[in-house]
Image (cartoon, rainbow, N blue to C red; front, top):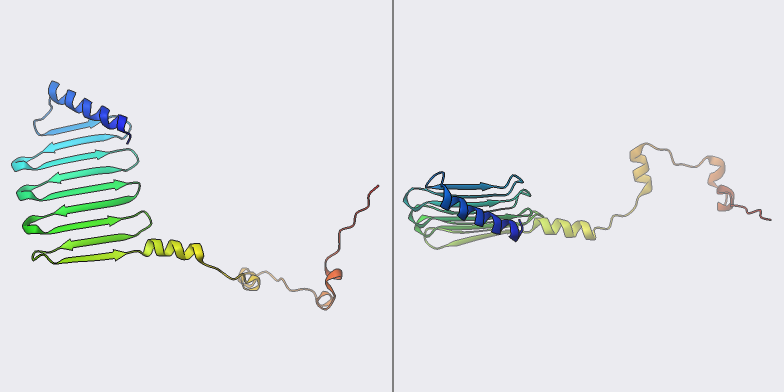
Length: 170
């Protein structure tokens, strides 16, 4: 979503909120092209803010009871999630469009567990640098084609197997 659309959505939200609020705790602005801004205020300090665009990109911020918070960003297939729960527990998770993933979790007693999965980049590098040896006979046998030469051409020199092009010019 471009900055112009974001500025337009914010200014329309302020204008619509000051003129005629539909509800005291909910504001939703849609532009008809897939862009959306949503702000919801709930009971006891809960607040949800969601910004989406037509490409599937979104930013979500949620504030819950007793200080719990959640942030989620999805941009072109890459995701980032951060969650802070009650009693100091927190989770952070990020993943890329290639399939890599990193997760870290902080438990109740402060111990942190981190998991890194780089299989997406590893498979991309593996396919980039993979050297497959060409085996034409194996591929031809798999396809069922008979590529063997007739017996009269097997022992003949290369000149007799393939006719040479001749040029007869003026």
